Amino acid sequence: MVGSKAGKAQIMQVDVTCEFVAPILQISCREITFRVEKQPSDVLTLQYQPLSLKNMSSLPLSVVLALEQPFVICDADRQPLPADVQPMKLEIGEELHLSIRFNPAYEEGLNIWVAEKALKICFLEHPQEEQVTVRGEVYFPNLHFPTMAVDFGCLLNDTEAALLDLSLQVLILPVDVESLSSAELVAVEGPDHLAG
Image (cartoon, rainbow, N blue to C red):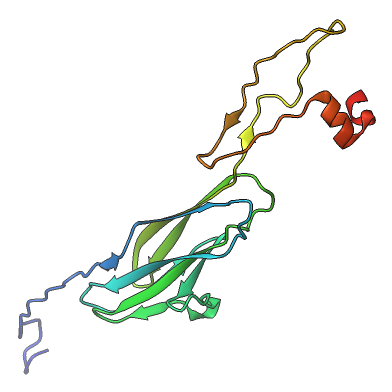
């Protein structure tokens, strides 16, 4: 009621505007690739690459980062981020310097392997999600053989036979290959090895 009169009367009109601000995060790179070429004398060590995130929005952002093994999110000093650090607050214009760590010894053995994961960047204030592809490649000087057995069939005494060996080098690393004759195998592994 306004005054002594019953009923509705307009006393004020207000224009309301709303500005929707989407998070704008400047990411130093969208893909990080680690490539390790293992030589016989090398020791596999942790590898690091830098990553920086900058808040380009007109509002502060709360950022949550997630990345799976064999990769780890580290600070600028290469120390792994503790799980309780998140979410991380980025003020307007603030830049966060990080390192991504790759462990090339994560998988055991001497076989070539590749890991590819997504670094997920989520915002508490918005459902938008950003991603950075993280890839790790570990190469050994390996050969691939189509079969692990060679059968010459029956041979007459004092005759020779040859088979085409289709070995395939699966990497650009140089590989030294040495073949042993059956006499050399007997000397190295003993006569019982050839009987089986």
